[in-house]
Amino acid sequence: MRLLLIALLLAGCSSFEEPARPNIVIVLLDDLGYSDYSASGSKIRTPAIDDLAANGVSIDQFYVMPRCSPTRAALLTGEDPHVAGLGFLPLPAGAEVSEGPYQGYLNTDLETLPETLHRLGYATYMSGKWHLGEAPEHWPRRRGFERYFGLISGASSYYELLEGGPFKRTMVENDTPWQPPSEGFYMTDAFTDRALAYLSDHLNTQPEKPFFLYLAYTAPHWPLHAPEAEIASYDDTFEASAAANADADLMATYAAQVTIADRGIGRVLDLLRQRGALENSLVLVFSDNGASAEDISNRGLHRAGASVGTRDSYLSYGEHWATVSNAPLRGHKGSTLEGGVRTPLIAHWPKGAVTGGRVDHRSVVSVQDIMPAAIAAASGGDASLLDVLNGSAETPDRTLFWAHTGWRALRDGDWKAVKAPGDVPWQLYKISSDPEESRPVEDPARIQAMADRWQEWSESVGAEADFDPRQYYRKLR
Ligand SMILES: [Ca+2]
Image (cartoon, rainbow, N blue to C red; front, side, top):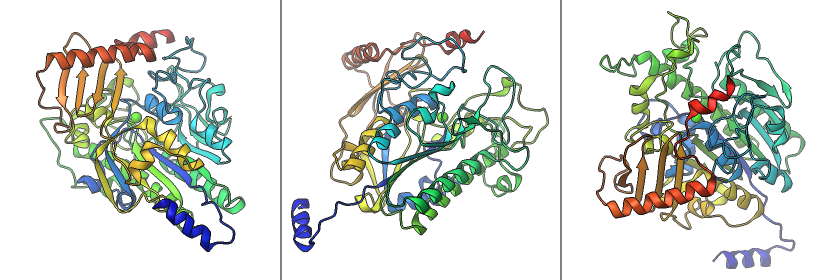
């Protein structure tokens, strides 16, 4: 059918032009829960993302890694994070590291997605959180991005760069350290504004050239920081749970953080639409891991009595709200349960037939599939994820593996085996019909076979089965 169409087109045109290559826009959210979109029933307002999903395609069984850096490494290399050098998080610049699966910066032997796209003639821009290497030789401009603005490190205040402690936060513009202004700065808006500036410059000066934009928000990763009026817009929206010590203001602030990021996404999409560039842009939106139940009360960064959301506050929303965010999945960020590693992928590309509001519930897709799909889109090639997105194929039969701080898991078609850290047995679930991981299946032979496969895989990528972050951070002392 496609050949026939091409033949008809060729017959009708004296000079056949190759279709323009799509722009590629990847928007990454940080620690957003599985059901935190209003389209999936949340009370959080996400109109821009909902609109994208309503006119694009959503993949329900999309898998990432359990934590920030491993997912980002897999996204930008297409490899398992251990192979990419980020089995765990980066260490501070200057820390002694041994090269290998836990070196804490992107493996320099691998070509990154921006490096490949740059080689293919794309302009490459990044605004946002890097978290793939703290030393200047590992920063974004050394790994394929022509222009970069953002936060090199992980979690940060949204209002300022806090000093002190081994984890100094660094923002840079291109290769130069950058200090936020003392007033009026809000991290999410700064990332949006810079992305818009890059796109405007591009569309004004070289509109014929395709671009890659990687917009990596820190939102809604803790600390819970948002302007008062934004938090107030969620007054009386969430029901506090006294039993769970879960204040409604915590969730209201988190929701405000999500809505501000969604507004940023809307501004980027509006600009592309106004400039006629949206139709032929492959836009992908997802979260780097599931909702976070992390307790950060021992960090010493919260001033007693400060209201949630303000500059002097430094709070997370806790296990109760993280469970709400991830409903109905079990587990949170950091674990290999579904609540740690599963998040919807929302894609939109009208010219590439990624359109119509379809939800694919059957395909099993990994964050590692994005790089080959982006390269295929840029070079006119094939990739399984592109086939899934344009509806020409489904890929339910996949094997995916995870190893993270003692958590282990593999998904093989309908089945998932998962093991918590420590001296506990593997659990088996028929994950295709039990995504809540609530009905363990007794099948010792299958469990043993899957555990053996996991062992073989972990050795092949250099994952430590019982990796202990405390040992890792001991290097800092
Ligand atoms: Ca994250």
